[in-house]
Image 1: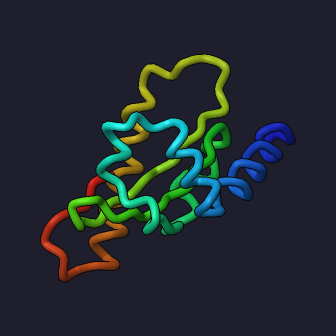
Image 2: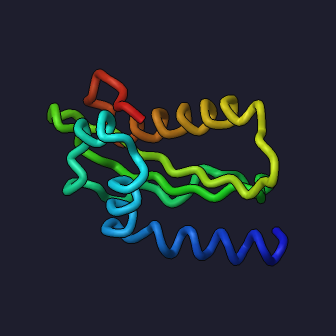
Length: 117
């Protein structure tokens, strides 16, 4: 990983690993129609990364949050260090979502539904 990516990755993780900073970020950048469904007082870090070693242009964090309807959900931050749009990033996001659901299923085998991500 190049020095600029590693510095940015470390800054990102150090900053957004604090729930109050992540909460402020979500309040400022998510649309109200999404925010109204999240209980941001319940926001807590769940896992620090799903990005694999070779994917050096990404950094990520996973937060667990209760939904306003009482269900559990996740907020997944994925920051991309590219200077151009990646048309296929949706496939990478889908892989991460599957990993999150698999982790949730292992940690909560009694639950019959998968949470919203």
